[in-house]
Length: 201
Length: 201
Image (tube, rainbow over all chains, first blue to last red; front, side, top):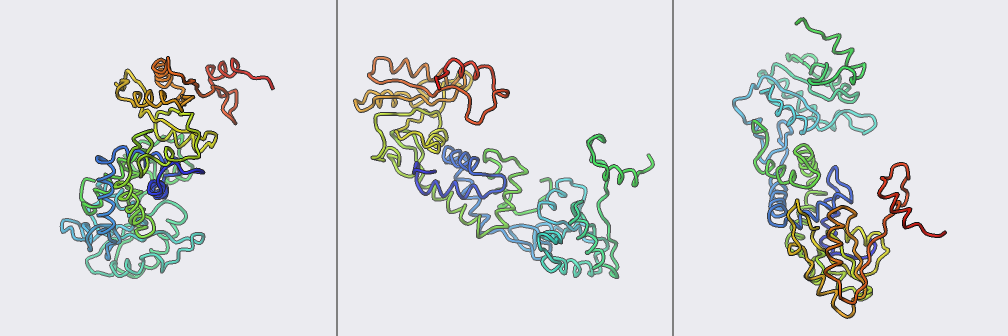
């Protein structure tokens, strides 16, 4: 703002909000005003939640999940099948797979994908930790749940090579028609993959 | 999430983030992970900014602007023309007008509009405060900068009636073609208003 219309503390709040993903200057102003308008019901709890998470959140030293304890809730969960490790790019992917509820296994978060453009090299990702875990006799399957992008598939190839020689089965997610998807809107690559992997009814 | 995949503190952070305007469960998870990933650069400053604004933000007792002092920065600004009071619905409108930079006056925030549906009555809005300020001899013009909606215009009519008899000039924003707007995309009401208010070149 050219002229000063509000206090510096509120300007700072707007600037801090604008750094959130999906927020720009306008939505940050809107959110800041909403917070101030709902001081007790929304702003107080949010301030407490951020401060608490800021103090306690940590990255699991085994799998890379974000939690407030280390090892994380999943790594400590005795009811999970410890013979399968599902490899994901980011913590958000892990949470998405858990919401699907189709897996009951351990995870391993790489922290990104190999990328010539982004400049991420194998040593920037948590791949050596994965190799160590894969070598554990109780591990029998490594499920690569990486994004179906060039970077994701490059990373999957690289990991498959690194795991070569270990007594683990390496698998990947199936390609195909998304549930609820309309064929007319799907790209040729997906359709070709779905045809190639067709299954008897 | 059906099963627990992270700590309760992080769940609380996600739930608190999801209450922000424009955020849903997915974007709240994304933002929470972003915060945790950028713990020192983004999360710390945001926590401090929210806590500080939570402590200090208040509503100006004269005009209704949000600031960290009362009276607010604008009401205390001696370089402003104190003979004009611009009436807006919300604080966000005040800030938007200030960004336009075409006014150098005082403001008055109503806190909403009269609405049969929303149930806001004249006594729910800060209208009596406006009448008091309009009766001040130094006030010469009340500029109604309300939204061009049914509620905004109803409220403008109501305020005009309430100010009847006071020695102030009541004005409103011009209707017309938005700068940069294409005629083909404008509604008939706007075009009719722009034609009616046409001006010699």
